Amino acid sequence: MSARRGRRGAQAALVAGGYALGGGLLVFLLLPLVALFVTTGPAALIDGLRHPITGPALILSVTTTAVSLALILVLGTPLAWWLARSRTRAARVVESVVQLPIVIPPAVAGLALLLAFGRHGLVGPMLLAAGIGASFSTTAVVMAQTFVAAPFYVRAASAAFAAVDEDLLVVARTLGASRARVLLRVALPLAGRGLVAGAALAWARALGEFGATLMFAGNLAGRTQTLPLAVYEAMESDLRAAQALSIVLVLVAMALLTLLRRPSGHGRPHPLEGP
Image (cartoon, helix red, strand yellow):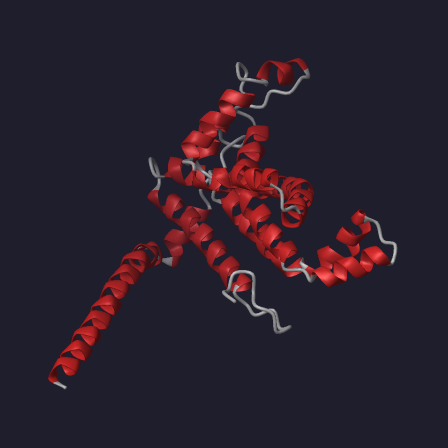
């Protein structure tokens, strides 16, 4: 009996220690975000938002992320559908390649883009011959955002398509619907919430992109300077502007996560929730 009590006491102590360590990690993650908000006042925040660097960076970020998201949706949706429907080894290889930008360092992604599409890159001379100068331009910003953000949408969309009831797709095919019609009229509506969640995550990743953009597009005010790059530059001259822009980015991220965590209301688990 005493040995059993000893084991229970040890298990309770272990659980308590685990909770304490988890709480320590939570404090570590939360404290910098709290500091971001409590170390400034409304007046300083407004002054930071009025900084000349803020407006152009905000407009450029909104514009480029909208374009990159449109490209991701148009190009990524058919790819996600194919990945969800195919059981071949080639599909699994493609899936791994598509997810690779998630794990490689952003600076490496930027260098790879530069070596591929830069003036002296793999296909850069061909782009220049066609009148397209990709590197260190707004086009480069869109390309960098698309490169790093597309995997988030494709992965979420593929999972959403894979969760669609196979019987419904078979019935649609037996009723004479083409493959394209099955995708547009059956699969897309049923997987809609997952697609929206994936698109939102991709947009947020594009909005926060820094390393690949800096390497491939540079930090040119009004041309390639997005919000994260503006934070980086403002740190050298005006901490208030850097803090104000950082708060804007954090608030956008918090609003996005709150929206994505809302239950679907149809008895199905949310794409960001467990089964």
